[in-house]
Length: 452
Image 1: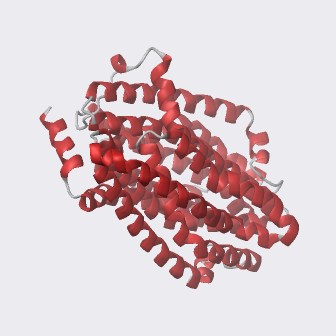
Image 2 (image 1 turned 45 degrees about the vertical axis):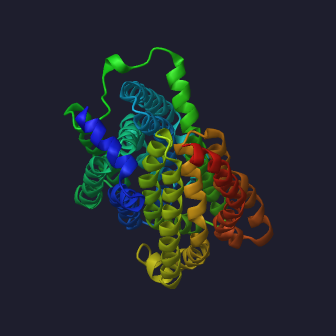
Image 3 (image 1 turned 90 degrees about the vertical axis):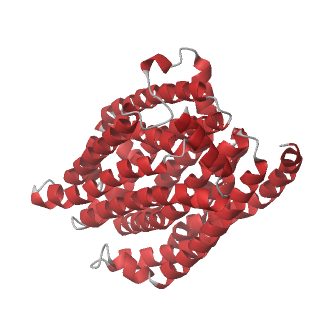
């Protein structure tokens, strides 16, 4: 009880800026390490050729699907847990956590079985050309075997962040990420396993991360407790988890669909276009990881304080997070625009088409980077406080409502340039759609603030 009270006081009384930063820094480190090992995969596999690089982009779509399952359950559980802990209802938080873990393992297993049974068809559906398919098939097999563990890791990671223990989550994720970077060259080149070696390295690293994350719960280092006795028998708990996780499901699923659509559209222009867009996607995710890390450090602050009735702190946390992320993304956009040729050549030097296509796409992405934070912070706010439908609509916007129509139509009018500029245009339209939603939310929060 003393540990729970101490955490509650910290989350509801520590100065908002310091609190968000204290939770964001471990999360940023975790996400940067994850982004680094994603880039590491792309870098090492690129040494096997252009088609192998394209396979990384194809399987990245598959990993995004697994991530969608894990984040749906993880964010759905975490959003509830932070509000329940803020309302000082730890037993209910325990039930959500245990039930969420069961759901993550179950859905991850179903996804693995389905993917392994229909692997070749799935790879083609994800955009693999005939030359990319052999590489994608080898890579995907091992990733699918690890799907239940990967989904469960996302769940445990989000629970730890929800209760304000971001440093524990950092240890598990960074250890796995660093291990992945070390194992990649060993398995790919040292053992001569090629692209399958990259997949095995990822699978092993994910298992190690899961074991570390689970150990914090088993050793009693957390507020939330995982116990078979806490697993809910009624469907209500699971439905609430899925409802709260629906924005994450939409966001992650649409990310997968958007990547598939991007790969299919790029494949019209050859393997070089698929490889270039894959490299640009990984580079953007590296920058976006900082933005997302700060946002995920903000989410438990918003959830805890909303549950505790401290709406003034929700407001302060929102604008602090928005200012910091906007400044960082603007600086990153300027730097990325200037260094685009150098960054693309880090991956593939001997294919001029990949460099040309990649530089154009990366520079277009950099121009839109300052607009991205508002959509992220807005989405995370609504999800944290339980306004699932508003968060879901925003999740649909960036890579659904705007991206998919653009990627399906623009290339038909302006060719490859349409593939390169679709995501930046979608980001700009998402930014514009968030402005009235943000205004309406804070106008509606004013009476709650006065009574809270």
